[in-house]
Amino acid sequence: MQPLPGHQFSCHTSPHPSARSNPGPCLPPDPLACQLDPSPAANSSPPLDPDRDPDLDSHLSSEPHPGSRPYGADSTPQAEGSPSPDQALLDWLASHGAELQKCIFPVGFDMQGGQVRGVAAAQCIEAGDLVFQIPAGLLITLRVVYASPLREIMLRHSDIGGNGTLALALFLVHEAHAGANSFFHPYINALPTLADFGYIPHLWTGPEHDELQDASSIEQIRTEAARWRYKWTQLRTLFAERYPHVAALQTPAFSEDRFLWAVLNVQTRSFANGLESDFEQCLVPFADLLNHPPPGVTVDGPEWCPRQGSSGPCFQMRATAQRRHGEQLYNSYGAYKSCQALICQYGFVSPSPRAIILMDLAILPSKPKLQAMEERGWNGGRCECDEYLPYCRLAVCTKEDIEAVASGGRSLANAVESPLSVANELQALARMQNALEKLLEGCPTTLQEDEQLLAQLVPERAGGRMDGPKRARYCDPPKAGQPDGPTAGPQQRLHLALLYRMQWKRSLRHHLKFVAMALCATRTIAGWCPAHHGEADSDARSDLDPSDIVGYLESWPRDLLPISEADAAAAVCSALSAVRALAQAGKG
Image (cartoon, rainbow, N blue to C red):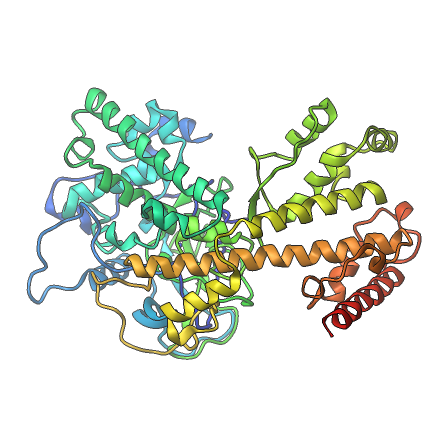
């Protein structure tokens, strides 16, 4: 079973919290769906099972988390002596079979000049032990949505019912409007407010977007924000004209702010439901309170249990190692996500060598090249740096290269995963190097200037680190309803933008080092002297891992590599040492 991109279920302990699932693509075998009851006692028992409706299955075959109340939820002031939203959530979970005895929430953890709320171990937990368990009946799944009063809308409009993010968001809007009459009221009442999402770039101003300095990410953020706002205007008209009886979806209850609140909660908190193979989105109360782990922490697999004795299907979290009392428990939002994906979807920055860039390939409109582009899933000018070199090989390949690939019985789209020839590789690497250098040169500030600005903004973090807090400690959490992290106001958003653009530039420099190494390796293979070509930039070649060289050389087809990978790697290392020596001599 595989989780959605961005969610692998795991339990970690290291000092680093952050904010949470991207839309994308589960339906439990015995789900407990939501049939709203207008009586005050409606939230005392789980909703009904939608599998009792035979029509339903045919249509379905197809980082920091504040604990404040949501926009549009029950706005009745909390009575004196009544439990807080956090405590009400925990009581509700426990009363319906959730096992949370080994967890403490909320707990505050230091992070980047502020605190975030997270979940800590209430006792020593051994590796493999169950940390917590949530019954499937407490999950908000698509089956729950389809069994609610929104069923007619979901079935009639595939663009709504078939969109996991949109379907779950509308359900949150509906249940928030129902207030205490909703079975899920304790959960919804503890979700972040719209104001708590100040760290999500979709809610930033234009000048704040510009501080990111990454045109690709800025374009994506603005496009997605505009798309959701346009979708709200469409839905508002549709619901007013065709579903006036659904009060929760009528103006003023169905406001743009309420809609965005629901969308952002789903975007940052949803999981892939592993109880069946479709892996559609769902919301898992309590599990969505865990923060993202720091770099270097091993990620566990999902723990979805179709059957757990007499308790039925459930979601579980198990420890990967021994956890001490008070240590923070983590859930990975995606070990391989790019830095752009993390900030756009979850509103936090974490070290990642992966970066998405705008492609500028100027590919000649030949049919084989265009077909290969389509087969490789070309995304309108956007790709990750890791995927850029194959596109560059494709851009510069000649008629002879294409014929050689065809004569070998290979697909051009697959062939460009490896060098096509020495000449093609040199041109492709030079093109990639030029593209990366242009991106860096086009930034209004350098990495060093960003580090200086960050030091002024956050003096105690003068080094500009972004790999989590300098320490984690067991402490009192921020109060519910107060800003939960370091990214609430304009200055904090500038802080986040600085962290992002620094990491983005570091990612580009990381790939430039790879290109420099690959150029040197290719020239070595061709029997050329790297120094003869004026490659004397020691910074671009420092800190290179010999294993990276071997990994690159292993991508070469055997008929193009005249010597073994190990001998070639030794020759490349020797050439790189000569280049660095020349550079140092030049500086002397």
